[in-house]
Length: 266
Picture 1 (tube, one colour):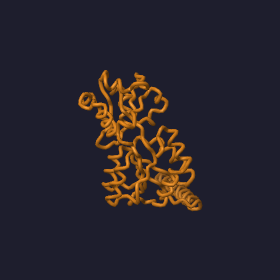
Picture 2 (cartoon, rainbow, N blue to C red; picture 1 turned 60 degrees about the vertical axis):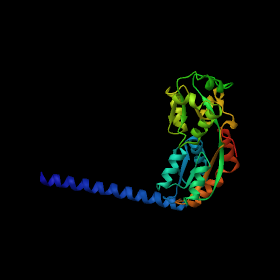
Picture 3 (cartoon, rainbow, N blue to C red; picture 1 turned 60 degrees about the horizontal axis):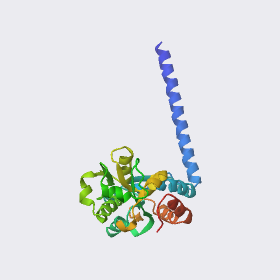
Picture 4 (tube, rainbow, N blue to C red; picture 1 turned 90 degrees about the vertical axis):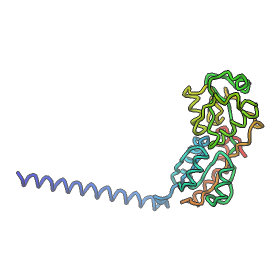
């Protein structure tokens, strides 16, 4: 009986060893195939993307990945949060901000090179799921006939700063201060409206998709331009891929996608 147990254990050990060898060979074969294609397992492009541009960036990343033959990883948050992460040592190849000031600050600090490139111009809009604001959205703001108004954090999100500037332009900042609900970034601000935690919100127009017809586009004169700039980071692990991305994003096909998504072109 002892002999039989030992024999079975030996057989199982041989089977485990065989499986391990097979997996090792398979992994080596995959690595060799990637090498033949000229793609190292370490080749990938890592983007830090402002929240308002995240969905468009994913679509563009798919096209870039197919063209360049490398995967693209996207980390999305407010521009201010991403800037803080970069300063704290987070490793990205390209930073796509929702403003041009933060990329310039990183350049001044030696964390990015050589200059910011504006890739899109954002549009602020007032939206409420139960409201048709397309004709006179400012009338709703002036009436204050709503319980809560969502805006992105003006300290970290350019759209939040534009929202505060809009309220200042209308002379409504103090009157609406107690109604404000703050989202971490502009996409989470839209979530607050969609989830019923705010009656309306000043959000990114491109994020509204088919809902745009019921939104009020805030006139550009009411806030500073939302010039969205990108920059290659000094700590980029893939500087050549980063440069390829910059060229790709300024190409005619990419610009067409950006415009169709609801952004204005620089």
